[in-house]
Length: 157
Image 1 (cartoon, helix red, strand yellow):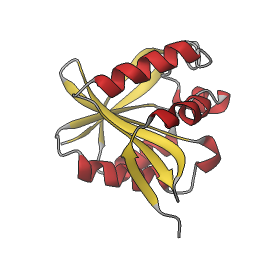
Image 2 (cartoon, helix red, strand yellow):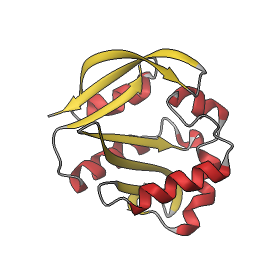
Image 3 (cartoon, one colour):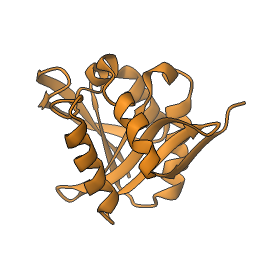
């Protein structure tokens, strides 16, 4: 059985995270991404700001020591939100579910909010399995699709 673990982000993680987060199909599914996933300079600047912010908890997800994603929580407009990204080659293997379970044990802040494109059924399922419940939908611009789409907002009380 593979071992899923979380650890702080290290300098050596920048390249694998950048490559993972620019996969066109993953960008389309995640929808709410950076304007240009291929902009390495913008990615590094964003990651640097995240790593320097004491209000952000950011972890790399590993499977048997190999980077397979990342997970984080941050405060936005007064709400603590959670986000995660799993390498597309690892979708459907239970990694997101296990990583989220571990992360929720690490981060005790409640309530927590999460957001997912309303047509991203797998991500919504992972979140609901962890106890998040849909509370509303919004229509927002999704850079990963270059258009407005419906987004589901979820809450873990």
